[in-house]
Length: 493
Image (cartoon, rainbow, N blue to C red):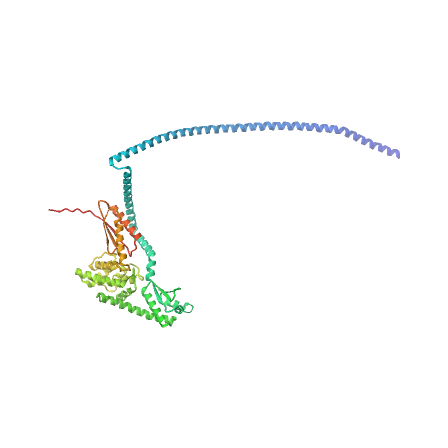
């Protein structure tokens, strides 16, 4: 048994020893093989690196060659451009030299010409310059006048639409002051406590008053004062009379307001009729339609430029009658025409159109003769006057409206305005004489024909009108007329 174990142990040891010997022999061989493979891989890597280096060098050389070729081409182009610029610079320098020489020659010629002109004309350079400036100014004025004439012609071709727009703009600008004077009445209350009674509980009295009368009642902080505002003067007078009676009575409530207003309206109607009849008696005219008489009487409550219209009509009728008598014409139809010429002003807030056209149509519908109707229609030149009545009515209207003091204008202001009108016109070159005519409504400027031509006359008229509009204040409009005429007189012996 022991022998068997020993034999097995020896075999195991032998195997172990053999394995160790194999390992000892195989390890150097494996190391040698590994080293050999490593050297082979190193040689391959070195060869690959060398190939890559050589290829990179070849590519770099090729890229560098391309860049050098591109730079050479650019250098050639820049060199060519530089040559062209130098050539251009030489040409410009040569041109500049020629221009300098030409300018020197031109200045020399100008100086010589100026000297020759001075010797020929006997004028110094300053005098010649002033003469040239005057000639240029005159030429500019002529060209401006021609341009203005063309513009005016184009404006006339545009016609009525442009004119209406201008008139509407003027009315809008100028209506405020006139409205403030003629559309508001002031009514004084006996005490401040009466304001509360006029207003009423929660404003019911004032609302009823405005609804019944059609007039705005303005109550502000002014003590014991209320204002009545309305564009219809008859309606405003009716409201004023109604308020006066209510305050006098002391009983103010809606029913009472309506009752008093009806009574006041009837009273104002009677006053209008009475005023119309008084006007007819004053100018000795009769046989007029009652509606014309009543409408004529309503003008006692209307004003134009501060002048009472009914008073203006009575005054115009007297003037027209006097002129008719001087001319040997029947004065009655002339006075009738002058008395009715502004009757359309009582209707312009109800009917569209000018007061002359509205008044003529109103008179025709109420039985007035064709001559009277024509005089009414023509008194402002909208229709060409064809009869003696029309011409005298037009003249009487101008005399009454334009006389000093007729339209809230003192004599001193009137005279001063006429003097300034003549001064403005007389200040222009070539003006011989100036006349302020038709109570300052027209300025007639007489110019010397040898100094001022037709275009110059137009320029003077426009400049005078512009200066008058800028400097002076006046009612209505002022016409500027420039007259240029030549007269030759010989005496036969």
